[in-house]
Image: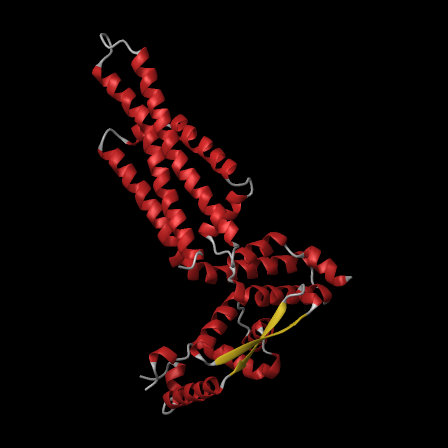
Length: 224
Length: 114
């Protein structure tokens, strides 16, 4: 009776966080130890909110050791993405400025349909699991899950390039058919071309990131 | 001269001593509580486990899975015990510390030594 009550009092978000971050070999013993001490505090009449704060503090103090241990694992992936984005931004700054590299409608036009296509090719729940598999460590995922995640990343990446090219072509066609070349300034024409090409640029950038994520997934979970 | 690879750190030393005090009942929670009760040092369970894993890798302790009780939410305990190499290392560390303490004048610690 009391045990089920204690279960209900445990801060479940903290439990979930621990579950995600801890490696499988220490997950049960460590989480069990925390729960046992939490139960002991409740049984001995400690204030419930204090016990819950103690539990939260233990979780936050504990996970940093495991996050630090995984730093090398995840940091290289994040660093590669950061360097890629940073260099692209630098290229923009060296040219006409960063503002010319940002076009929200093009970005949405590439990301949103690509994401929907990737979901359609896999399953609606696969992307969350896939995100965890790439960024965190999932214990012994099933082969079907790995392949589904790999397919999700491939479809997302490939569709980003295809849609990027599609929207760029669409933009160029729209512009070519709508502009009066006899009166339009060359500056306006080239600016319009640049904006149209941004969709393709975003598509290629996303493809690069998803390609690395897919390779990382296969390296982590598929034994050669 | 002690091998740098297998040298005992301060916290590793404390954890091993706590395990000796606990005898057969040394697992994460009891080790944490033992340290807190004896030296009033608040430590996280994560710090205990990362240290225990390191000590196990060095061959100073071994572990075996224990029972899963309801107050643990059905999660199994992991009991730890010292290996003969761990006991030998503790003795060696104590000898090193004792040797270093020999000949230290108490005034040095009082701050009156010129």
